Each structure stands twice: as structure tokens, then as C-alpha cells.
Length: 479
Ligand code: FAD
Ligand code: MLT
Ligand code: ZN
Image 1 (cartoon, rainbow, N blue to C red):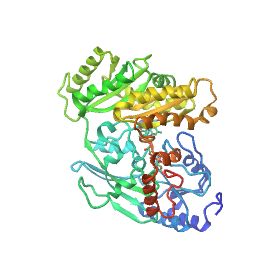
Image 2: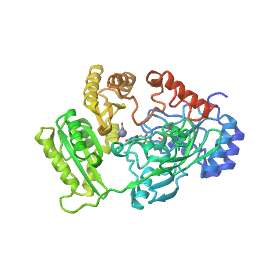
Image 3: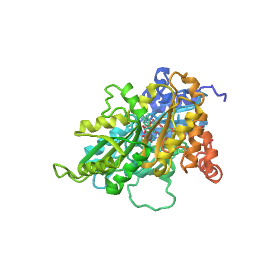
Image 4: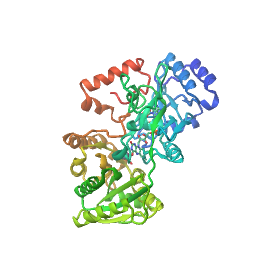
């Protein structure tokens, strides 16, 4: 079939009969929000968007498409940073939105589990857990849009990995519609279950290339009864790491998040985000530390506040922390967090940028920031490094902003060179070229280089075994 040929008419008729008008979108205006990614790197085409209202409907739609050899692109909140959820330009790939599969099937505060459908928005999952007196700890800037299926499919990390791990670590069981339309019900809520290969883990981080996650059993935790947030200006990258070590050495379990920001990024926040006040302006390096405990506070100067103040005092004496602001209320703590969470949006508004979602051993984060900033400055004079992110788990977003006055398109034309420049440092430090955003469409060409040989061969054999027709999210993850 030529690339631009729409769906075969009989398939479209069968999908329409199966799904009804709410479940099948064909009007160009309705397709529009599903065609481009958040970063505006890709814009594809699709003949229709399938929006199943039940797992049975999805399974039947997948069977019909498999019989017709029609490729499918799973889509959750479409917040992928690597173009993972958008169709290609060929016009044959059908977008399948999980948005209507958004029920919470069960919450069990005794077992500390929530069984949620894939289309449930992450924030709604967090709120439901809180409503049951528990915590679902996965937290990231896109949580108001990203979905349970999306965060599992990318094995998202976010702000609390340092304490709770990645999405994979928060999942006990899965329900999956396989590429031939079979439904696998693996929704077991067991902490221990060694019964052969751990198939559930195959689908986490597979970015929709092996099947559709339709529901998951998520792990819940005791809710925080006390929390503290400190926003600190630090001397340099080494001082940021030294501060992390001080908290870890005193009470590792207390640290819920430890995030680094550069002065440049904090400046973008102040410049572009409405109400973007920064309590300690004018510094070159910042850290946000979030401490939390599920023990009830004892009133007055509580345990966490004492810990925060003691560590900051020590670090100030050592010249690592230059100044610090402590959130005195829930509103103030949220305002401090906003500085960090709005970084992607603020950077977007400043102009063209190249993102490098990379990880290194935690001890190497200062070297990563320093060396890759210097190497990029040699490559493009005037380039503006905007490193920020999850220092506590070694995942720094080593992002680069276009030089002031440079044409955005000309800057983006250098993306490959910029990414390679950062990756060279990352490789030297024993890191990974993709820490939490995944491979999507953006990084497939790096796979052979970084994961070639037996590792990539095994991935390709798994793909061929699970999806022999190659219909699930073609062009993503594997080169
Ligand atoms: P989509 O973007 O819709 O899809 C992502 C991938 O998963 C695609 O390959 C898609 O095909 C596949 N997929 C989606 N749903 C399913 C399903 N049900 N079954 C099978 N495959 C599926 N990520 C982090 O890890 N940490 C962060 O801190 C972070 N911050 C972000 C901040 C902002 C402002 C934005 C825009 C993104 C951020 N991300 C972050 C990117 C992150 O990957 C996504 O936010 C999230 O994990 C994707 O969820 P989604 O529902 O939007 O998935
Ligand atoms: C974040 O942590 O805010 C995102 O993952 C990073 C990014 O936008 O590069
Ligand atoms: Zn991140």
C-alpha cells in the first residue's frame, strides 16, 4: 500500500461499527491534538484516532487492525519528550488514545495497592491515593496530563526516584492487549511472585512497541505527615553534591527529592513564568531539597525542620550553601517547587533548545555538568547551558539553549552535534544517553552505537516474537 493511502474502507467501517462516534475520530479538527509532540519536533498524520471505551473494544480493534496489517501508535497524554506517541508522516499509522480507559478499578489501603486503567491522568492517581489516606509517589512536571499507561510505558522517573524508584518500581501487575488482540491479565497485586519470566517488566519502558498497557496494579505508600522544602543557592556543582551527601549521611530515608538548577534556568523561570518570583535571585547554582516523613510531627521544631536547619548550617559554615529559603507553609513549599517544575516550560519560551536527558553515577554529576557545558561552548560559542534535574539519582537534564540572537532553526540544525558532544562526556563518565524520557523516535539512531551487539539483538528478537508483523509503534525505540 502506498504510504499516503488512507485506511482500507472495510476496516474503517468495521472500526466505526465497533467503536461508535465517541470511539473513532476522523474529523481533521479532532485529529489535530494527536498529531504533534509537546516539543513540536514532529508532526505526523493519521487516518483516524481510535478511542476505545473498554478493554474488550480495544482488543477487538487491535484484532481488526492486525488482520489488515495496519500499524498502531499508542498515545496517553502525549507529553513524550522524544516523539514517542506521535504517528509518522506516512498517513497510515492509526493513533490509539487510551484516554477513555481511565477508571480506578480498586484501591486497597491495607494491601497498599491501586488498580488503575492506563488512561488515568497521573495527578488523578495521586489524588485518589491521597483520598484513601495513602501516597502514590511518582511526581513530574507533566503530571496533570501524563497518564498511568504513559508513565509505565516510558518507565518515567521524575522528582522522587531518589526515594521511591522509577515507575517500574511502583508497579506490581499489568493488564496488556497484545499485538494480535489477545488480552493478558497479569493484574496480580503480590509483593512476591516468582513464576517464570517477569513478563510485566517487558512492557514497562517498551514505549508501546510490544502491546497496549490497559491497566496496572500500582504500589501505594504511607502518606507524608510532615514535609520541608529548602531552596538553596550553592557555591558550585560540587557544593550541590556535597549538600546531597550531608543529607544522605544524616538521614537518607528523609530525602524525597534533591534537584539541581542553574542560575540560567532559574532566570528563565523569573523571566517567563507568570508570578515567577525567585527568593534568592542572582546566584549561579541552586538546589531544591524536599524532606518528608510519614511519622506524625511532634509540634514546634519538628524532626525534619531540625534536620534541614542543622544540615544547612553545617553546609553554610563549609561555604557550600551561600543562602537558603525554607518554605513555611504548604503554599510556600509549592511555590518553591514551582521554580523547578516550570523549568521545561520556561526554557521552551526562551527559544530553541536541545535536550539531553542523561544519567551518570551520582558522584559524577558535577563533572558531567562542567565538562559538557565547556565542550558545548567550544562547539557553539555563546550557547547557553541550562542543566537541571534529578541530581539525587544522577539524572541531569543537560539542556542547551540557543545563543542570544542566533536563529532558532540554525541552532536546531546543530542538534545532532550538540547531543553527540554531551554524549561523549556521558560515555566517558559511564553514563546513559537516555535516563528517563526513553528513546521514542528521537534517539533510535543512538541505539546501535550504545546498545549494539547482543543487547540490541536480544531486543530485536523479543520484538519479533511478540509483534511479528511489526505493527506496534513502528519507528520507535529500535533502529
Ligand atoms: P505519551 O507521551 O502519550 O506516550 C509516551 C510513550 O508511551 C509513547 O511511546 C507511547 O506510544 C507509549 N504509550 C502511552 N500510553 C501507552 C499505553 N497505555 N500502552 C502502551 N504504550 C503506551 N518524564 C520523566 O520521566 N520525568 C520527568 O520529570 C518528566 N518531566 C516532564 C515534564 C514535562 C513538562 C513534560 C512535557 C514531560 C515530562 N516527562 C518526564 C516526559 C514523560 O515521558 C512523560 O511525561 C510521561 O511519562 C509520558 O506519559 P504520557 O501519558 O503523556 O505518554
Ligand atoms: C523535567 O524533569 O522537568 C523534565 O524531565 C526535563 C526536561 O524538560 O528536559
Ligand atoms: Zn526529568
